[in-house]
Length: 187
Image 1 (cartoon, one colour):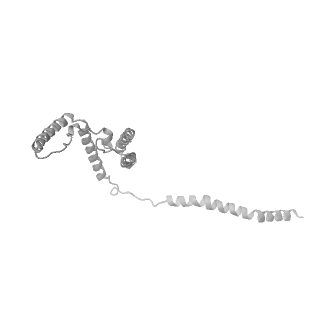
Image 2 (cartoon, rainbow, N blue to C red; image 1 turned 60 degrees about the vertical axis):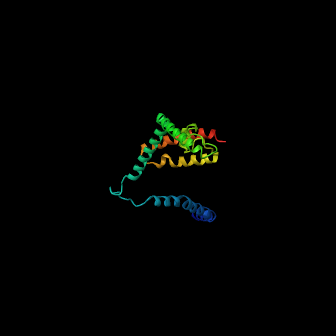
């Protein structure tokens, strides 16, 4: 047998036996490896948009809302922390006005008297963060729900500037601490 003819017959026999395997390998490579990359790069190639100065505007409403929220939080903190003596004076005035009204209405009504406000317990900082009334009884499920709502509302990724993100991180940290303390007292 001629060497050329030998090589030709050997290669044709090999091609007949290995042809479908090679075809499946090449087809699989193209279908499962090349095609996803081609589609991915086509998706990434979006038309480039030229942003003019008119289109890029700072969100003034967002900034105003954040400043208003900071003012409200500051005022709330000042009410809860600072004015202890002025609160006592207003409570004393309220008590004296209640006593005079009770003495006046005592002849008209008979029955149990409501407890004066000065004997009521003040809300702890944790209860203030979770917007709970002083001494309010709540379940673990309700506490967890409020915890997740507060975290969702104050997540740092929602804010744009670094200052806003830092304040949101601090608030998130205080929410976590308050949750841990309140969780211990839940029945």
